[in-house]
Length: 209
Length: 68
Image 1 (cartoon, helix red, strand yellow):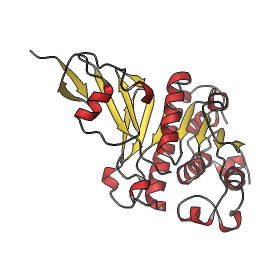
Image 2 (tube, each protein chain N blue to C red; image 1 turned 45 degrees about the horizontal axis):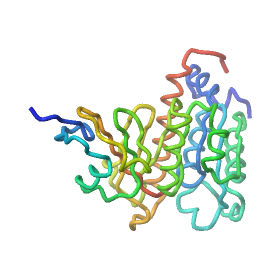
Image 3 (cartoon, chains in turn green, brown; image 1 turned 135 degrees about the horizontal axis):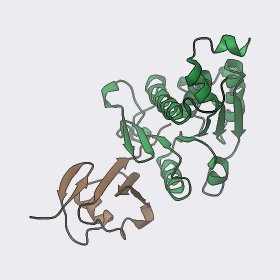
């Protein structure tokens, strides 16, 4: 497969913009794995993906993994899948639990950070660290992805460089079990916003593909 | 005229010395995880009971839900 064939349906300037971009994805669960696939298909130049977990059977109802990947580290399984889809981008994977000590080092020179954690306390830790050390990089957070239906309640809010997507209601710890469609909607809204911000940043600048 | 501040774009009556922690109690915020910004600046969770809300402040409160 040739690069020209893969991207024949892509807008040349949009592709040129995305190919220069570096996006960090914090977490490779339901949000991170689906978001990564959308960004890889779009031709994002480099994805930095961090997670410490392994693929389990319970993940397959919403996360972008396969039965034969059960037991593998998520970042390794995901990189394999991303390469199978689009071998022309770079995938920099880190099998680590993100904390306040390694976050800044891993994410400091990216164009966008996508928050794809499960626990609200981790989301809050990331937002506080980001605000202190990386506040100039746009941060896309997901909040409220559980349950099903209620498309009209999923929304995007912005406060400066902080974007928040979700319904801000459906906490998975409060009985809203996550399912593929709604998790996928929010993950793809995160990817969609990332593409929008990246095209704005790089359109018409730098190299052509 | 009484002083005001904005909470998620809605005007609220401003009271001198009101902290973020008191505002959360007053407005019945029960969620544990929040993103709170005053005039664009993030207030850390550890600062909620020390951070005062200035008159005419623009306060944004977002909810953080588990799930991902």
